[in-house]
Image 1: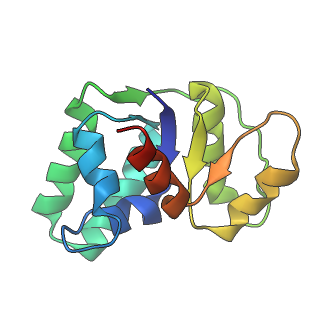
Image 2 (image 1 turned 120 degrees about the vertical axis):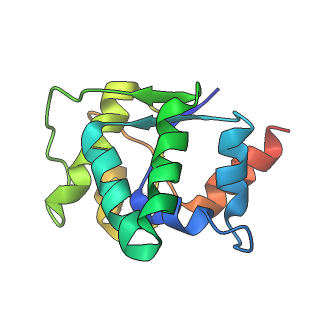
Length: 138
């Protein structure tokens, strides 16, 4: 099962049952991948979710993430600082490296710099590519 790091915007757009990307959230519950996160990432998830929906729904989503057996909470002890354009995005990169994740799923162009960095190698895919990979694993 692939380990992935899901950036906050990709999580957000995957939550609506009527949305184009709902399969990402549904496949999380079907245990088709392992969602890797750090406390920093979880905090950002909760902050952004609370801005976009009720606090109760946001907390239920966070609870779902931390209680699933196909999640991996990590402590990223080393900061690689590979992204300079938006240093806040580095928490996702550091998590992916610590988790030995298959890839980061993101639509954020700040992550594009990762394609030019040889070491440590962090794979980046967009959410459409991730959905196609999930479909092919059936």
